[in-house]
Amino acid sequence: MLKATVNGKQYTIEPEAANPFKGLVEGLAYELDATGAPETGMSVIYNNKSYTVVLLKSERDSKQYTLQINGNKYDISLKDKLDDLLAGMGLTAGASAKLNNIKAPMPGLVINILVEEGATIAKGDALLVLEAMKMENIIKSPGEGVVKKININKGQAVEKTRFL
Image 1 (spheres, rainbow, N blue to C red):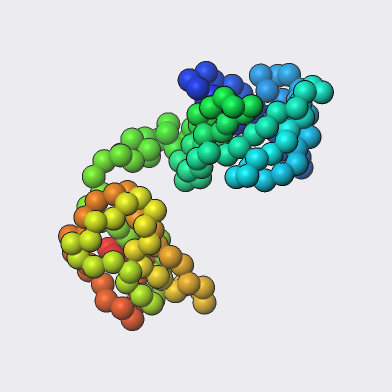
Image 2: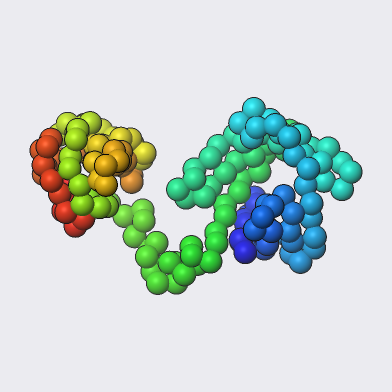
């Protein structure tokens, strides 16, 4: 089950697990027929009516989207049960607070550092490459700011709780 906020109005959506183009919105059944790609435009048929849908903006981490449907703009925010649980535990309360440290999300080896001290970074900017379990992982900035200090070196092994 999803909670969707569309231009300030809330809806409950229950998509089918096997086919997200079918399900319930506010308890009413829906079925969509769609072709095309969201970024370039999709043709969607609902209740024998055709709609042109274009994805204008997508922030997957925060589940924020902006769609243009038949020329009208819609700002959409999605939340699932996990989002509600985390919010209830207060784990999203500090999301917009100033971030002083970034910790390694897993143990690994620092393959490359992609920023320098004093660099201005934006949310989503690549900071470093961490090799873990034979895979290279790009660690990205969770917010914007200025890199004050880098506490690691290229080639250094780090633990999960190690400040980067």
